[in-house]
Amino acid sequence: MDIQLSEKSLLTLRDNFISDRAPLGRDDNTAINLYEVYADAKAVNNSILATLRTVLNPRLTNELKVQHLYTFEESSPGGELPKQNIPRAIIERVESNIGGNSVFTNIQLGGQRYSPEHFYNHVVQLVDNVYFSTNKANFTFGTDIMYSHMNSLYGSEMNGRFYFTGLENFNNMTPYRYAREVALADDPAINQNVVAGGLYAQMQTKLFKGFEMIAGIRADYTTYLNNANYNPVVYQELGLRTDNKLNTFQLQPRVQFNWDINDKHKDYLRFGAAIFGSDINNYAMINNQLFDGTKVLTVDIQNVGVPAPNFVEYRKNPSAAPGKELFDQLGLDRQGTINMNGKDARIPVVYKANISYNHFFNERFKMGITAFMTLARHNYMYVDRNMVDKPLFTLPDEGNRGVFVPLDSVRRTTGNSNWMDGRKSKKVGRVLELNSEGKVNQFAFVVDGTYRYFRDGEISFSYTWNDAKDNTSYNGDVANTATLSLMVKDDPRDLRTMSYSDNQFRHKVVFYGTLPSFWGFNIGVRYSGIGGTRYSLAVGGNVNGDFVNSNDLAYVFDTKNQHVPEKVRQGIQSILDNPLASESIKDYIRKVVVKWLKEMEV
Picture (cartoon, rainbow, N blue to C red):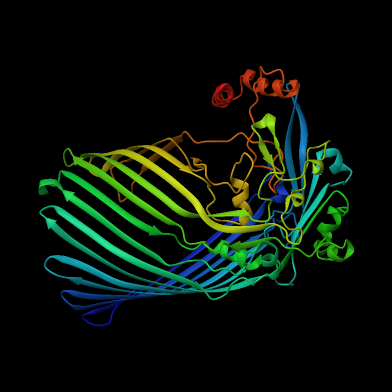
């Protein structure tokens, strides 16, 4: 709604409301999840914005904006389960016989791991822009001030989980492990208050005929008024402070050149480069404030002392799930999982550059080519600082893969190990420290064209060649996700290797076409396809002895080496002989074996 207050002032009011429902929209991280596992998601957002634009004189305009944003996000168990949720049952190594071979998978029932949870946010933002024009240049000066109040109920792993090996143990209700994050308060929701401010300036001018330059700079600073508590035990044992703050100052220059060659509107050359600061990952800050070791304790029992599950009772009475009473009943150490900011943690920064050339063959047909470079530095990553520094033994037959638990703690029958045996300090649990060692190198080339064949009917196409490598593809979410997503040989803290990103694709083709408009309607079709995504071959278990049992890279043995156990050689050979197996997997196995053999010869 526009209100003309005076000849020079215009007030505009806008309100945007979004309601998003996603029944059964939250799955879990086990290979096969039963129907009841899927949780419901709901989001409601409302934004009201008032803009006052005042033309002070022909050269000077002021634009003031005030906004209030309310966001409501909630995850809750699906209709099959009580709203408080129940523990998960994770049945590992469920065996099937396919083509005479034994294959294994994992199955889950019970509650989804981070339901229920909610995020209720109120944000008030003030933006003021001053636009000043001269005969040679246009200037913009502005400030951006924002206050946020956030109430967050974090639910990850709060419902508990039982681990079983095989269906027989599940049928007998004999789990080998029970783990749960236990909140000490009846209402574990936390409040955060955040103040952010920014100043910026931009100049737009023509350096010569057809050649335009846009240059600007922005400075941002954010402060959290609520922080994690200081945990003296973590400091005494590991020398780490749980109350570290994030370095949030960001200086962001940018420049762009647009050249209409000879000012004939047929050939355009553009070049731009900039440094962009990232937004703060509030989810990570919630993790680190809640999991400081004073609000949530960790139950992790393996083998002896694992409580007997009763899933029928949990469905009737969710409060019957084993929880904080176990500390007294079993004499467990009152330890908590720690999520914390590292002392040098800072906001990620992205360096971007692009150059493009576009040619108009005529008023109906144009083509262009663009090159992009993106270098991300100081990306977020969590690493376990309570894990022993060096492997306690190695596996010579697997390229000296390191194992971070004592050899005598590994169960001979199943190969299972207990990550707690590989801790530096027995007085604290996992200590996941947020650092800024992540980085990304991404390059892309795009060729595109548009042809307007009749009236406003158009055909557009583009082809993209892309290359993206990183040392971790973690980009937010719960702290444990960082350790789940990084595929490793042995040490999950080693971020020296740059390999293909989880977001890598090699080729992308897009086609888009529209019919000429008729009676005010447009009809179009779009096709998009990508190829060259990457995958890793992983072990179905925990080889290196850390907390995670799903991210160990598989060692590819030589099927012709008689020193390799026959069962292992037959398993690899069965993949090579399987006509249904992807050729890319077979090629990968063959290339890796050749690589190993060459290295051994050297």
